[in-house]
Image 1 (tube, rainbow, N blue to C red):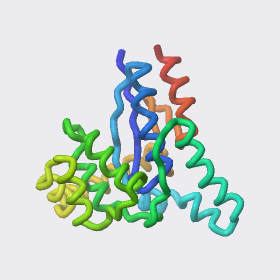
Image 2: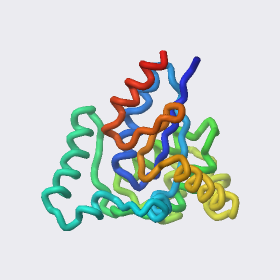
Image 3: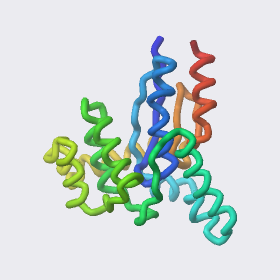
Length: 201
């Protein structure tokens, strides 16, 4: 039976970006399918009384420096391009509404790749609708559908509903991954995701 790996994400997370880059190869090794679940991390934090580790440890210089070092080390050892966004922390509300429009579409992966790369490779300001529109056009994605999701009530409500549903499942941050009912948190849990997939074969 083909297994599904649910990837709960928000573009604002550098850890979600790095996990996203590694996950396809991991899933392919186990013939698993990835289901992308966009959520709004700021709402998750409010609902779970949580906050970004960079915010939580903002006054601890050594811890903050280690968190940044860990991101770059993870990327370097896997041959990934990664730069901290000059706009971090980011407002990804409109980009995440676009991700809702992309769910299940043939171009979903291209949209996710385009936005993640715009932030964490090219340092673009994706809370600007004009910038996001340019990115969508550059990657030959359906501009009208994505803009409708960004500005329309359905896209807003769907994102809210998905975020609430994720919190009910136990999500307190991103990236969170599910294999069946088993939840794994953070990019450093990917090894355990792989062990879970192996155990289900």
